[in-house]
Image 1 (cartoon, rainbow, N blue to C red):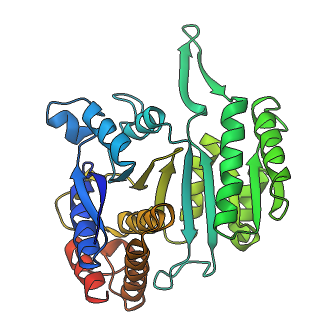
Image 2: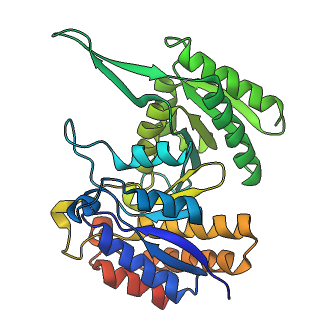
Image 3: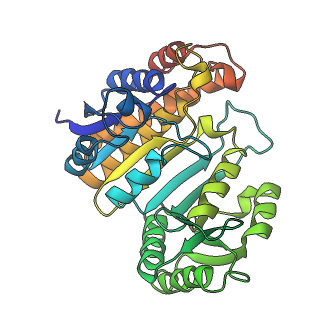
Amino acid sequence: MSSHEVVLIPGDGIGPEVSRAVQRILEAAQAPVSWNEQQAGIAALDSGDELLPESTVEAIKRTKLALKGPCTTPVGEGFASVNVQMRKQLNLYAAVRPIRSLAGVPTRFDDVNLIIIRENTEGLYSGVENQVTDDAVMSMKVATHSGCRRISEWAFRFAAQQDRQKITVFHKANIMKLTDGLFLRCARAAHESHQDINYQEVIIDAGCMKLVQDPTAFDVLLLENLYGDVVSDLAAGLVGGLGVVPGANFGEDMAVFEAVHGSAPDIAGKGLANPLALLMSAKMMLRHIANTRDDEAAGTAADRIQAAYDKALIEDQKTGDLGGGLSTEAFADAVIERL
């Protein structure tokens, strides 16, 4: 069986623990991957390298695939986000966050099935900030026609591939008429080529209210960068939190799959971390390999892994954050037993 080389970035904090657990599960599921371990974030700094080493970037450019654990980002000071740097350097312009209810994780809703697509390179997250006067700082929201068109067309193609029925754009074009207005115009233009997919526009504050009232009213959400960051975490709360949702970042010919939760340094090394989010991201990666590289073995491994962790959760085999008593490695064992 041929294997696909995947760059593994364990990250820092709980990253190495959850990465090891996921590697064990993929090996047990006979997933057709081989690992090329690279560093980023604090782990890279501690080894005397740059925050995002050139060797890591070049490895991803070569393999076109990466699985990334959480990396710490300081709040309000210190170094810039590794995630933002990676997205810019690799031009990973489309972030995808599937939000699915899990039978073994009880929440207020039991039938959530959303996909959130976020533009990943523009908006306020461009990081263009200036000290204007002693009293004022300014942050610039950047939108380009090429960027808005690119994410809109990608979203409709992706929705069609996933057999989704509707795309809803959350926006604030009533206030930000130029930037969000441009985003809407590009989304409308993309819809013209995909008339079989329903299209809706909702002002984001009203959209958030409707989302928490009835998430089943939505199918695919398309948002600019900052809105997508906020709403994707809000939606994760509908199904149990960031520990039970995967994430992926796509460019034209490469993809980085990642756990979207933090590095939780306070519990690092204690065996308390839940590896499920990174495992779900690895399952997404296997499905991506199956679809883009025509590898049936990858798709089979993805199906087996999803069935196994679903069964483990239903049978109350969970880590502490989900109300269970299993350690990181014990949860991995529980999933492997059910493969």
